[in-house]
Image (tube, rainbow, N blue to C red):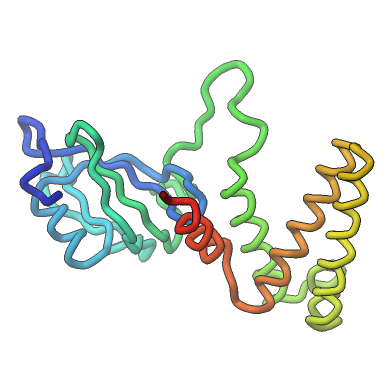
Length: 208
């Protein structure tokens, strides 16, 4: 499909949903005209049309929090667009990661973010601890013990998962699986592999 297939509104605009390609989290909703879409496709930087200023704007041009656009998708009715991006900083002008951060309803929204977002947050925390080596940090201590020790922990936790699964202990299985995933993320961080790399590989395997 091409830009001629986009069904712009009477105002010449189309709504654009921006999604973190790593976590699946929706970051913001904006609008684009044809020129903005052309700019996004050409530069691979999130480009929109500001309805208040009546002008084009590139995300991060003033804040420095740009977005690398991996994919631009048109919806089934051809009247809405999705930018799948790698964000470099918060999406919201308030400094929040996403513009959607005000839960509605009595329960206050979900008790935890989606799994992909959780994995990315844990991974980024591991990277930060490896870099800063804060005193008393488990990550710092294990990192300083060396890669072999990290890999040994992956093997140990995998064994615990097997035992919990064999014993049909759901709560124990969830707990041990979480330990395994954490240490697997740790091993990936040590070798420069990100959750996004895993997601890309799994997605290519999954797609028909």
